[in-house]
Image (tube, rainbow, N blue to C red; front, side):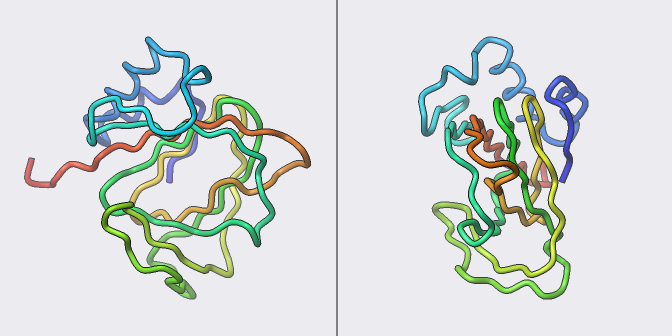
Length: 157
């Protein structure tokens, strides 16, 4: 997982060519004004999930992992923790097997790291990065978030 300020996202374009599409979209669109839900940028190659929510206590959240997409989780306004653990760590239990259509597998994890995300920060989450978004940092702070879903390229390209 990579965590940084949004102004530095351009430094990570070498990771996946689709990241450029996300950056280009951000240059011409106000992410805060996007409608809630899914917005297509480039069909299923790059799209955005726009959310507004109250972060939750740990018992109301879950760890997830993806295989087809990497996430760029951007906190536009507010503050939350995102839980993190590498998929290769021990003591990881699959609670819901991989769903191919939704590109998600859910886990129960006992020991993990909390990363603080706040205004204009992002986390790039790869397939080996199990993550628990939406963890409450402070009481009654609404989070405005945009999650770019970036399709992973086949290594043969």
